[in-house]
Each structure stands twice: as structure tokens, then as C-alpha cells.
Image (cartoon, rainbow, N blue to C red; front, side, top):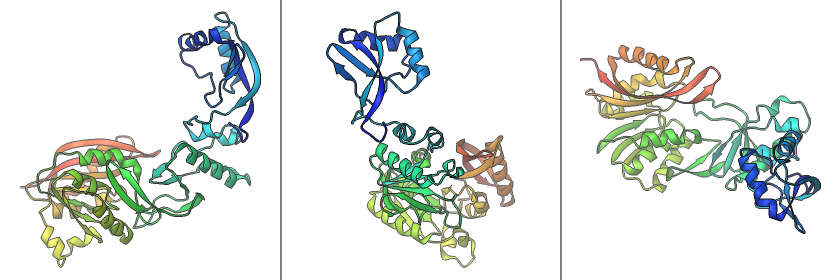
Length: 382
């Protein structure tokens, strides 16, 4: 509704004994088109029932034309009272009557929820020059909290992911400026700071897919770019594996240790706060220990993962091994390009793709490129 709990509304006024017939007509004749405003309470006046209509003149005209010769009714204007228990289905719906129509068209259609925190990108609203722009953002944040009861804090995303630690700039819009939260995903808990660590909830199904793979008992895995541990912990949760988990970000490493502790895992995770490239150093004790001992490698750094294939080849068992490679690849044919990218670099290191276990587009990344994943079985040339 609007700012007030009571708003002048149009109703279909119909006798009580015809109410059921009216609702059946909506379903049968008008194919469940949305005519009734679920946000407003149905009214009762003596022997009459008043069903609230949505604020759409064309729809009301369609309704009248569709049932006028089937049942007796009147269209009346009366004071509508908000349905307190109504659950809004979108931010836009929650803000009807509270923001101008031209602003409603600019409201973000998607956002990320991480624990109690929502992160919103106002790319369209930021294009306007009105002085009320901050007011509009705050109204959007309030509506977001209204329809997502778990959310307490809303940040505006000010930049894309950037830098060595893959962080983005955030600005508080609603609630306490506390960037630390606990996010639940696939029966695992992840404590993190959205300002100091990289985490995206948009890979939830991808992490579920990989963690549901068929793992050998005591399989040895390297997670090259672990972050706070979403891949490693979900894999180790139900599998007897040993995972060497690397991340260069000290904050991510700190939370990784905490997350290993708070999740009851079946396998073993050995965390390391270091750049996996240093494993190639001839003086690296860990590198020399892990050389050609790894069964599976997770390479979730889409913008740079191909630059770490030399490390993957250094670590992979000579007999064969599996990599999960994430890349941003240009359209059209992003998967074909991703395979070609890997094949060219692998051949220089003496390896080849023995089998493509899985290849798919995970999600669109930009108008020109997609995020893809390639699950590949690699083998060393004889």
C-alpha cells in the first residue's frame, strides 16, 4: 500500500451468495489473471462482499468485459485497509504508492543476501540526477528488509570485485554498519566479513554440485582460492578426503580457520595463508611435498584461473587427475573457447585433456561473456 494504512481503492461489489461464483469465473473465464489486490483486505457490507481491485484501468476494463454478462456486480470506490499479513513478492510491489512510477521502474530486480546482510547494486537509480536519490535508496532498503525477515543490514555495492583479495566497495544504506555475519549454505555455516573477504551466494548450486561428486576415500584435493571455505568445507562435510586449502587474503584465512572449527566435517582441511604460485619455488618445502600427489584441484578464480595451470600441472598426480576450472569466456561459444584456452596452456606443460567430465555455463557475467565451469580429467603425455 502507500504510506497510510488506508487508501482510496476500487472494489468489485457483489452479493455474498454470488462471491464463490465470482471467484470461479475469474479462474475459468479470465485464466487466473491478476485482478484482485491481495495487499488490501476484503470488505463486508451487509449482504455484500467487496473484493479490492488492482490499480490498473486496463485490467479493470478486461474484468468488466469478461464477466459482465455472467454475474451481477458493481465497481465502487471505497476506503481500502492494508492486509497486515500480506507477504510482498518483490521490492517493487512493496513500494507501490510510496515511490513515483518512474522510480519504481529503476528498482533493482536482484540482490545478494549473505546471512543477515543484503548487498544491492543501484546501477539504474544512480543514472538519475534528482536530489532525492538517497531517499529512494533508503526506501528500497526498507522494503528489502520488509520482504526478507532475516535481513538486518543493507549495503550498496559501489564497485565490482577488484584487487588481489577480490573485494568490493560497500556503503551502508540501512541498519548497523556491521559487515560480519554467518551465512548458512547446504547445511554448512560460514562466518565472514563482507568488506574484508570474497563470498558470493550465487554459486550455491555449483558448490552443491561439486561437493556431491564421487570422491575416492582419502582423496587428496587442493582448493587453490579457498576464500572462507565454501567449496572445501562442503566437500569435507560428508567425504573422507584431505584438502589443502589456500588463500592469499589474511582475513579470509582467519575466517576459514573459524569455519573449519564450527562445521562438523568428516574429512580433513589443512589451511594455508599463501599464494599457490609460491609452491613452484624450488625451496618450498610444501611445494616439494605436494608435487604430483594431488587427485583433484578446484580453480575458482574465473578472471585468472588459466594463469595458474602451471601450478595445477605441478601438483597433479602423473597418472591423472581432475580439475574444476572456472573461467570468464567471451560469447558466442564460451565453453569451446574455455576448452581451447586450457588445451593450449596444458600442452606447453606436457599435459592434455583426457576426458571432459562436465562443461556448462554457470551464469551470465556480462553482455559479452559468461562464467563457465569445466570439469576435466587431465593426463600427462607419455
